[in-house]
Image 1 (cartoon, rainbow, N blue to C red):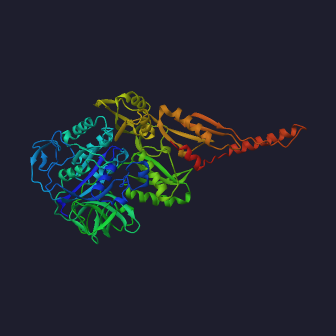
Image 2: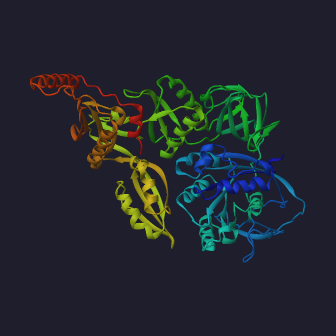
Image 3: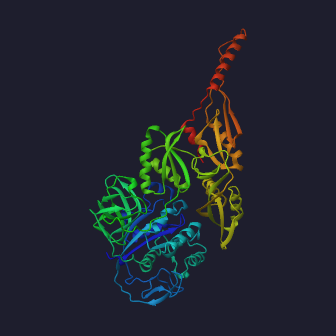
Length: 639
């Protein structure tokens, strides 16, 4: 099919605003999925996505749509007072001359044909959570348009703004849509006006849709055909951008690609510019949304290439694929390399499954380029891997996938962040808390800039929560009468603890947040060590704010005292920071009644037995070594 009949777009929104449900209706309207196979959130293929009710991985799908619009131009703007989802033959609009807004329109006459035209719509459904913003950025680079979806009952949220600005920076055509209108929200038109103000168009140009009932979805698809520009014409040799990948036991590494120039068929020899790998393509195809083999992929297409490669490191997200012999071709603009900000060590529950854990992480990295890992060693848990993540939810999802998809039970360390420490004129980056020095000249800790959107009635509660987490003085502005925006800086280490949970609790679930990593700033932090019988337990070492050392130290010792089994000797539990002991608990020794079988008679014999028992306990204490079982360790690390 001609690239002029292709439209590539994605759906972006805040979490739980209905992206996947809207995608379901699009799949039904276009007949992409048979009714007997249809199920809710069809594009969320992972069991974990369906259980949590969130999208974790971007999901591409190719739809064939028969539209009434035979002469696509720009977006259609309904007449004031008319049904915004009704088609208006002969009224196709175009950008107003000289307008800086991509969504400011004037109506012009155009020819209109009653014959339906066939279009290829390549949709990429995207996640909504901040931790998966990297997935969104890759989707934006592979398309020309974006549907900005807003929940009519919740209005504009933090991630709505973040995704909108990302789409605008990517130069995409943005189409506004308000979802869940079937719920008849009290201030639907007010929400429409706010979205129109954000996008920069008239309120009548914002689509009112229902992902649940399908109301207005056909009109939205027609507007995508009309408004989203087709892929740019190309006459060059084959080049394609990799935006995702997966591994197949039979076909090896499979690259998800957006073809920019030329075309590609099975059997072609290709070269990967960044990794330097070469291969012969086994098959090419598209997403329906399952992989479906086709004869070829051409410029403007979104599809896959089965490379046959068995090395996960051969496929790099953002790499450019060219034909063999064209190694000197200019690479396409890729993606900003994701920088892990949260570090957690993974250890197999059974030491003999170390290699299986390594294989599992390698396979997951092929589908998630933001995951990093390197070998690590713990005196308590043995060999494992230090893994890097984009946030706490990212870490939790990967841990769950390792358990479910590879049947591996793992233990994890406390989440930590990287600190830049200056000491004796040298600066080093500390990733592992056990390597953090007790004395230093200065330390820089990673910071994030955060935007919180909350109803004004919860503003005082939000500020109270923030003061528990060392945030900067917030800057507030009114988004509208029903929403206040707070802009603050907060240490990343505080954010990944349980800030989100406390924020949701304080605001009854109404507040939302988005964040971006910013420049590191000086921090007042120190290493907290936990000692059992005089020996430090590396897996329990953390770097925390100095004003929380006492509280955190005592809390950990109390928990440890409840979990550790008693021994034949007393066990000293200590919290150490800044070169001194800041808290102590003692687990008393088990008392064995060594004289229980003696009745009456001379007390001298009992005294001898008690003294012998005391000498034995003293010897045990001198050579004491407490083993912390993995099960106890797991309980200690629970949030």
